[in-house]
Amino acid sequence: MTPHISAPPGAIAEAVLLPGDPLRAKHIAETYLENPVLYNQVRNMFGYTGSYKGKRVSVQGTGMGIPSASIYIHELIHFYGCKTLIRVGTAGAIQPHLELRDLVIAQAASTDSGINHTRFLGQTFAPIANFELMRRAYDQARARGLPVHVGNVLSSDFFYNDEPTSLERWAQFGVLAVEMEAAGLYTLAAKFGVRALCILTISDQLVKGQRSTPLERQESFNQMVEVALETLL
Image 1 (tube, one colour):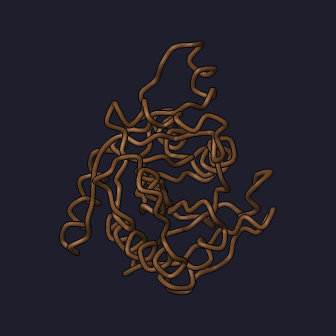
Image 2 (image 1 turned 45 degrees about the vertical axis):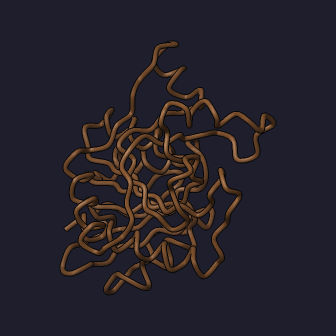
């Protein structure tokens, strides 16, 4: 038991999906896992363990942003022994060739957050995905005929930014999309020597000013979760 996760030892699987929204964690568990058991509801940040095609899998909400997600990721790895962690989330496209509902697999995660700047004493660390997981996820998406892109994403501390052109420089350097947690996940995975991946669904096309409907978000989110679960197998 930790300050944020009330699970007893052994209650959480080594393989974990990490949605930001705790209600998405509930949806994943109830839709895809056999015999899901709720192991955490501290701060209503739900966590469940069940099985998927015979493999024991957990799903844990992390909240929004690197600080919140890092708390849960640290505790899952350090206190519960989790070895494979896949974030499943949404992102805003900052490249014009990405369309709504496309999948983005984050090969690396740039960030405007100050956390790694502090951690590495003003130097720059490049947080990257686990190659084996990344390759599996890409193959799974292609096998399903899903539009999928692999590349750099931006993990931003800002959802509402005072500078409307702040994303233009990132886009000029080939960054595909903006989200809020991947850099924190990849950094902690590197620190503890475990495997991590971030799979994202484009929910907003920021270049074209397009947004997904709630139904589109739900359907494309399910496709992403299926890719992530198959990747864990």
